[in-house]
Image 1 (tube, rainbow, N blue to C red):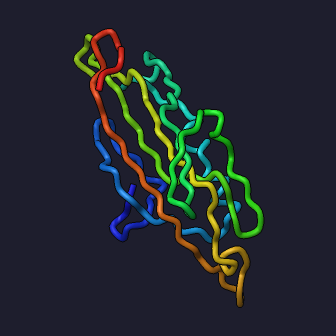
Image 2: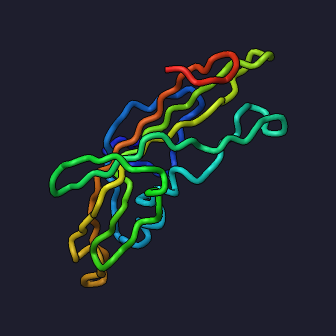
Length: 171
């Protein structure tokens, strides 16, 4: 989610049924390896589960379902389709990282329960990975005791859709 200044707020999560319109934000990178291990890592966005209902003791735990995965080439602006096996940790070499997250979109499907509450039926995630991210060499090393920072633009969004009564997904 974006903060007031257009930077990504990696610690703010939306409430249930709070849509997050697709928006761009700037990630500040001072350590490329640390960034590749966290917010540039596709696994950060795909390898977790959500509690499906408001009562964790009675709720199912849902793993995310990977939908579309694409790769963006920043040199040619081409986008190509990938399969879910492409979701691997980025590799870092010097001031360059490959297979980094450029865009993340969640679609949360929910259904009503007999008690009048809502329960998550599924969470679909679509990803756009970027071939390579080249960072200014000043960012990769400290200069004069200060760490330089680079910026990388990412795009995020969350939408909610009602599932059918039997839990199957609709659009």
